[in-house]
Each structure stands twice: as structure tokens, then as C-alpha cells.
Length: 450
Length: 177
Ligand SMILES: Cc1cc2nc3c(=O)[nH]c(=O)nc-3n(C[C@H](O)[C@H](O)[C@H](O)COP(=O)(O)O)c2cc1C
Ligand code: SF4
Ligand code: FES
Image (tube, rainbow over all chains, first blue to last red):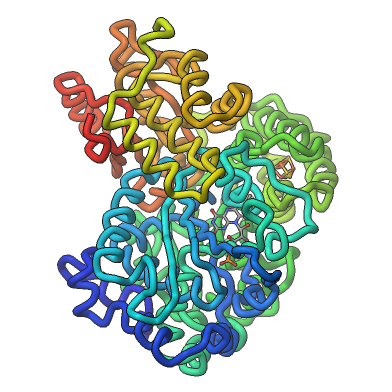
């Protein structure tokens, strides 16, 4: 059975309002922390919980918090990353739309722990309707004394505001987010210095994902130890998974980490299986940037173990036979989908979103897009497949920020697992045009399955 | 647009002040992206005189505004239709039929991706993942998301926007203009 730590009250009528949220136990964690815990106690509980960043990289949150520099007299800032632009990912939107006070409560707790008095939520510009929900909720929180000066007589002050992006995936990268919040282009910064030392306006800064910050609420309420009991091994707690693609029940799910992938895809409680009775062809388990898994590596690892929804199990086998939990953007492909077309589509995305600072990323994503387009539209040559492999290898690890890697990995994985499908596109170019791609991939599916 | 017409009405000036007040003294440049959204909403697109006006409002250099306006995909530095239909074309939407939706709109309105209808009412634009992948295919018009699109739904939408062309601006009710 899944524990619901974030979405427990999601079905309650009016839960987006302060009063209903409060009646359902809201802001109890803030009361508890401000009354009976020091900021370091909160950091300690988060460390104990084993919580790992939910934005994609999975870095332990408590450890990240303990790195923040504390020079005398310099303000520090907590920034909530609500840029959510990784294709396949729409969980943060769900949380903010449905239960905005959970994020606000998490922001108060986390700001208290870090000693920040002015915190921001940076939200992608396309989520303007969500921004308005958040601003209403923040106004309610001020009116009820949870934000502002001397919160509930504790002596702790906090101002919280939402600021907006304007359509740029790269602004989800933490240093690009900081640049953007300073009113500039979203060009990632060279690290070091890390944001923990020099971030927003050169002040010590922590950037955390929406879901990470929300998870601090149950951690403070029940204790880090209790949180660590949930989940499996080093994948503690629950995770929001946003599922899309060819499944019967796409949407956002809060799962307990450790659930089997098979149960997640096929159980009626979750995705309810592949749509229209078709077969599973492939799955991208953690957002467009993570390696795609062919059907035989989705529910089982290469060694025949059950694949589980944990950081460890999804990456079992490394990139040779594994993938990553990433942002939890779970995309499912049925037997009719074309891997070449999908890879071309994602590569076009990365080319479009490259900020252009590093040549391997700026040029490499464009070349890959061209080569993939050629292959998909029937003008490809066999050498193009090796050329693609070569380009992606030269991008990976050679750029300022991880967008370069994020663009390279999906291409590498597609070639690694579906090379025959690429070759088939060269051999039967006529069938690879858009209109025929359903037909093509059915054949290819048989090829792939031998 | 002549230079002297470029002026926010009082409620929008108040909104600009509210955006600036979110940041510490001297960090007003941080509100630039928000103020550009307001400017685009009010003036239709970000012409050079509009960008210069924003620079004056925030006490920054015009180049600082141009840099930003040309970087982010939501800003239009050329005129667009009253209603922008922004269809998501990324992977999860594509496998649920986004390409068919784009082709359908192109046919129906007689314009291609990136173009505006001669009456200046609709602009069609394909965009990257908008965070609605589980409810695909989808499009954004103004600040509204329209999900689970079908051809019939597109017909309905276009009809509705023909009768009542919502402008492209965002969060208007809050700005009271
Ligand atoms: C290109 C790129 C895009 C990213 N987009 C997001 C995003 O939309 N949301 C997010 O939380 N993290 C995103 N990240 C990860 C952030 O850089 C950062 O690691 C994260 O916000 C840290 O929060 P966490 O530790 O709570 O996960 C992105 C990273 C890269 C390289
Ligand atoms: S890797 Fe790409 S997105 Fe990242 S800084 Fe370099 S050019 Fe910009
Ligand atoms: S792919 Fe279209 S909304 Fe995500």
C-alpha cells in the first residue's frame, strides 16, 4: 500500500484554501518547528530522513543544506525551483495547483532551517495560472500570520514571493535560474563558485525542487526517522511520478519508493496497462533526459531482478542496461511508436533549448537534430548512425552545464538499444516518412524482438 | 506606435511597483521578466519603443531589456495575432497526436506554424513541453491550457475565440486594466 505524505488530502474540497488546509493539519509543522526546534534541529531531521532532491539529480537534501555558507551579516536565500520544463514532467504543477499551502509551509520550514528571511519561488512563465493560485495562497498565509515579521511570536521573519520565467528550459538549471531571477538571460554559470557560496546577488543560496521542499513538511511533522522508514534502502519516502504516453491512466501518482515498475505500469491502481491492448515497446522512466529502456529492460534488470521504482534499481546496470529515476517523468511507448522519430523530437527540443554558450552543446545538438531528421525522413545513410554516436560522445562531459549531457544520453541510449531500428530506417527509407510511421514501427518492433 | 503613446495606465504602474517590491532595494532588475510579460500583455508585443520604456521604468539600460526579450521564447518582438494558439509538439504530446492537431489547425485557419491569419486574430505557434504531457495533446491560448484536444474541441475553441478574442496577456484580472 502506498503511503500518501504529500497528496493525502488532495481530494478534500477546498484544500487549496488556507482554512481547509489548516483544518486538515496544515501549518502544524511550522508551529512545531518554531516552538520546539532550532534551525539546526530541522536540518538534522532532514538529514535523518534521507530525503534526496526530487528535481532530477537526487542529491541528499540535508547534505546540500549543510554546505550553505554563513558569512556574518550577508543575507542567504532559498529559491524554489518551479521551472518544471523537462518533457514528461508535470508533477510540480499538480502539487502547486491542488495544494499550494503545502509548498508554502515547506518554504517556511526550509527557510527557517537555512536562516533565510527572503525566499522566492521561480515558476515557468507558462504556468501563469499556477502563479496566480500561489499568490492567492501566499496572501492568505500573510493574512494568517505564517509569513511576514516575527512569525507567530517566534522572532523569525520571512518574506516569500513568486517570480516568473518566460519560456526557457535551461532556467531549470540552478545557476541559470539564478541568472534569470536577477533579470538576465538564462546562461548557466561556471561552477565553482557554487550557489551555496555565491548565488543570487552573489549571496549564499540554496535551490530546491518544489516536491523536495514540500516533503520537508511530513519530515518535520513525523520526524526524519519515521520518513526514513518509508521506501527502500537509500530511496526513502514517497515520490511523485507524472506518467504520460500510451497508457490507460496517465496522470500524477504519489508512490512509495520501492514499488515494482511492473505493478506501476500494469496495475489498475496506477497506469492500468498499455492503451488499446497494445504491447509495451519502451519506457523513459525519469524525464526526456534519461536513457530510454527497451521493453525487456523495463520491468526486469539485465540480471533478471525485478526493476523497482527507486534511484538504485532504475539505474541498475549503469547506462548499458539501466536508466535513472530523474524527475519522475515516466513516459511509456507502445509497439507503434518510432524510436528514431522520438529521438529526433527530443533532440530538436534540446537544440531549441540550448543557451548557446558552449560549442559542443550549441553545435552538437543542432548536428544531431539534422542527422536524425535525415534518418527519420528517409535520406539517411548507414554512416549517419556512427556519426550520431560520435557527436553525442563529444558533447557529454564537455559543457558548462548538464544540458549537454541531457541531450547526449537519450541519443546514446536509443542507438544502444534500438540500433536495428535506425538501420531499418536507412534500408527502407520510403516507409520512414511521417505518415507511415505507425506501419514502420510495427515492423520494427518485430525486428527488435527478433 | 509612437513614442508618446507608450505609457502604462495607472493600475499597471501599480502592478510594476508590486513586482519591484518583491526584491530588495536596488535589485529592481529582478522584476524585468514579470514587467516584460505585463508590457507584452498591454501593448501586444515588445517593440523597440516598448522595450525602451521598460528600461526607463526599471532604470536599466535598453540593451539589458533587449538581451532578455530575445532570449525567452514567450516574448514576441514582432506583432502577433490577438489569440496565440501554442500547440505543444514535444515527445509525449507527439505520440498522442500533436502533429495531427497542428495540421488540422493549419488547414482550418489557412496558416502555417508561426504565421498569423490575415484578420490578425490567430497566430499558430508550436512550442515545447508545457507540463501537461499526461493530458495530451494540448495547446495554450493566453494563459489557459486546453488539454485532451480533439478536432471537435479545436473547432469549438476557435469558434469561441472568434466570438470573444481573449488577448494574449497573462493574469489580467489581477492588474485591473
Ligand atoms: C537543463 C536542466 C534543467 C533542469 N530543470 C529543472 C527543473 O525544471 N526543476 C527542478 O527542480 N530541477 C531542474 N534541474 C535540476 C536543478 O539544476 C537542481 O539540481 C535542482 O533544482 C535541485 O533541487 P533538488 O536538490 O531539490 O532536486 C535542471 C537541471 C538542468 C541541467
Ligand atoms: S551545456 Fe548547453 S545549455 Fe548548458 S551552458 Fe552550455 S550551451 Fe548552455
Ligand atoms: S509534451 Fe506536451 S505538455 Fe509535455
